[in-house]
Image (cartoon, one colour):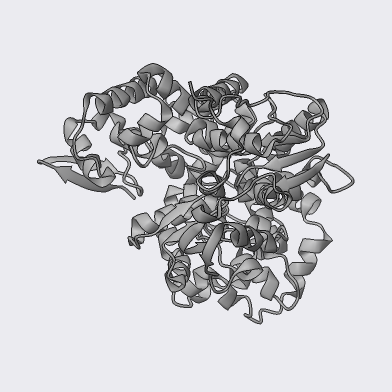
Length: 106
Length: 461
């Protein structure tokens, strides 16, 4: 079921929806892959802050946070999170942070 | 009897087991263990004897194998008329055999039954309306899912979903505190534009109790904000419950009958506690089916109805448009060609087919029907939980070709999808097939064209 994608010689195993399979494989090259897919031209410090918060939460809890938590920890309004990640916090942001695809109706 | 540590017959009832399952990304170990999972044929036989009543036994025996159901199935059409995809074959070779053999089947049989019950059927029930015998295929596939679940043969994501309901009374890990916090946040985020906006929590005797899909607080909180603004503009006396706010039921999709019952009782408990006049369900199809159509039976309500009258969100929208509670600015109606995705769960299986058309007459200048439509419309391609199951992603993408072609034929680039599941499927059709289409719930569209009464606007300094 798993496929592999590659950037600059670094390869990543992904699931059927293009989410990274093993969070521990995360590397900066992964961001380049998702950036293109998500239509994000320039990665800013704010993108990085969202990614860091998602990763920290996932390491502690084994699941993605709800958006309210993301907003509290970054200080970003919901509208701004969508400006940063147009496909949404549950999809684009989680994908870029290397989290597995959230389960359930997403 | 061999059972795995992750894949077994026990439902998920603790956070620890849920965490262990979540950590098994993509269900790699889970599905490996499933290959070794023994079938408890005695228990399965007893369950069939106890729960397979005359209606299903009659349907199984009167099926004439005429094949008239074949062309009604989008999977059959999308897979070049593969005989394996004929609905009668799919149900007879799984549930039919299970009943005939009184549960005396093996591991390979159950894995195949699972792969058919979740990977080759979305319980859209379209085949039932073309069956000359009136056989309720969706009901039978749902029942088959229940038998599979009882033996632990259930897709990984569905097992997680049903476990979430058992632990959180929501399909995602959202507690009552999380929910209340998110509602307060949505007020904060919108109060500059709508100064008196509120999301009344646990208000007794309101006209409307509003209930949602857990993905809204988890991933898409704007949906809650949009609903609040529209109720506010319409001047509704409404509330949300702090407990019993989640309408959906992945437990239903998983075939976890006990979990589905727990979930729906939580919602009815909120109604009993807060005594609203009516309930409104968010723009979700399966939430409506679980709580309004199936729920009363799970909860043992003799009336077969929800404790108070329940409206799907589209019904509330139409009522608000007709009564003038929501007024549309004619200049802001949708000008471009637009089409409408009929959700199987409340159109074909809930009788609300005309409501969407009437709404379109208020908000769209160039509304284009898909062909076929209303009760005859095809499933979005991802219903019944299929969208959320990685194991069947390729099959789903093939099945979605039927919906893709229906949309393309309308010439519309905007698809209105008042159902979370359909919304996801149309999004994924775009992701897979790159048609250049957009998709939307009703709420953001209504907000872009509704006339906001002067007294609700911010005062200029």
